[in-house]
Image 1: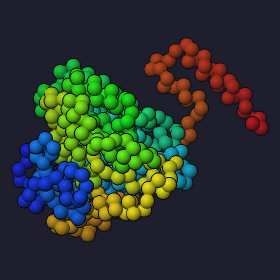
Image 2 (image 1 turned 45 degrees about the vertical axis):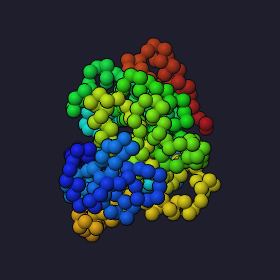
Image 3 (image 1 turned 60 degrees about the vertical axis):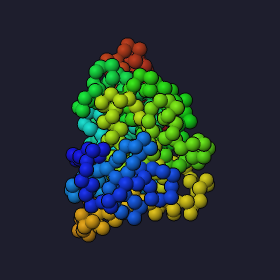
Image 4 (image 1 turned 90 degrees about the vertical axis):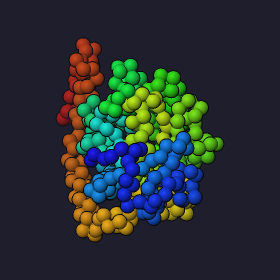
Length: 391
């Protein structure tokens, strides 16, 4: 889905003729679409950068379709876990705009390093949505090729992927793949809780001093599992960037247009050799941290209800309807597509074959080893000893 440059586009179609940062009473953030679906022509970041988007009607509809499909597939995965078909699932409910907006802002040559929750970014990179479900079902390790899709494997260890991304970005810079508009940029995703990890702060240091072409994308969903944001920081997270020597900006993470505009601008700066930056996508985790979590133990219903009024899909739908970009037939068609794809995903998950235990040895080393072969043979003989027994 090709889109115009959000930082320099000047038409600002179907937008209110004004520039502002936020309209919600929240801390200052870049916003291009209010919770009521009102379009804002441009918004100014803390460093004076003006953000705007200039999409066609078809592109606006495409973003809405992405949001709906990603949410439906995520909901299906949650249902599968509740029915015992997945061991665990980390839902993205409420964070679709931050993920779809930033995911669509990536150019084909850019590389992404996710956590375990970036199902929306994965979808935008063209990866079959069944891939992470194999991981959480325990039948494989994920399975996609990071080099083919420019999307690294899911990382479970909190914050570790920021160091992986920093090293990769340093390599991009050293290989001379920056400094031009077709250069490569890197993005690392993490949550607000990860900012308290040493890995993340080390990544900030290395990326800064080596001028790595890297965008740190923090999805501040207000809770590090059960710990609220005020237990993580005394200042807005985006301001931490200044202490490491690079810019930071807070964006309305429930606004897919602003998420796109801010991310595309940051990525383009990185690919042109202007170094790293930090984006704090201010959003909310509507569901549990994972399916093993009970969020009712640490947050109140009124807080959830307040954020439901800022729902990223509802505001995009309101905008499309308000501007007569989409009609009831379009919305019904998207809902039906989402339902069909969710049913298909469920069928494919249930038909996944269980792996043979001996297959754990298959991909340890690319060319095997005598020691590994001996271990495989020993394990095979042990397993076969149970055949025909009552064990």
